[in-house]
Length: 314
Image (cartoon, rainbow, N blue to C red; front, side, top):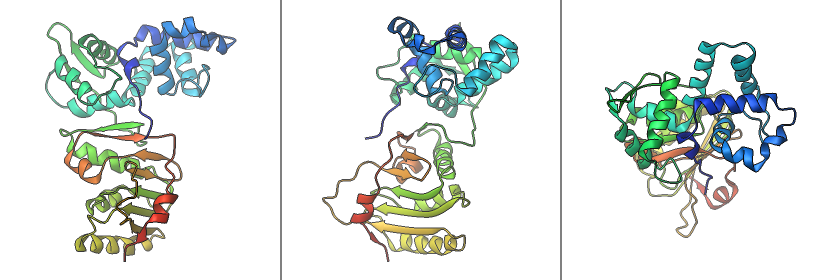
């Protein structure tokens, strides 16, 4: 199973703590001092936020290049406008904030309870998100202009929506966002390089449409689909052969392989490339907007057992 991302920290982190921890880490001569249990426990949520936002170096509490940039804007060459813009962009890349914006951007005023239900519907935390946690998130986003939060009437509107060329670590597939569901899958495909493997027991021909819309061509050597046999219809074969011929003219090999062994153990569905690996929903779930996630994983799927068990579709 892929690792999951715990976003509990997002409901307690504050602007004040972000600034304080950035200052403490940036001015510490020995960053290891901040690994002490007392220090970490008091600001654990903020450390988690900074770590997942890429503001800390991997496996240390030193500032990353992006963290240093924020430190300088905060404390060396103060610029509140630039600070607000930078932190807003960092927040927009967060999967939970991305979910909020994807679901409510462009709509009229939304109730706090609607957001709380949405967050729990998608299980974004290790436990149920309560009302106070939802308000804390809105207060943080209000500070950076992503939402306008009306505390008195318990309503908010989304004013900013992230649209990044590079995929974020996690996308939520929602029934209310049919276009964004497919668009985000295309975005993940567009970032793939080298040899690509799409492993989905129930792959359907509609996946070829998503593939051709997202495929970057440059830097891609081959695409291999590995599925079961239930959706290999005559029309699916026709689409496959037509796309195979088209991609071959761009020096990209397309292959569809099938596993007809009913005892073979499938492990979720995956999009694997030389430069990234994602746990993905079934094609039909993406198209229908069934509740699911597109999740980047550090641990790569070993595709060799799937290749060894499968045979090419003729």
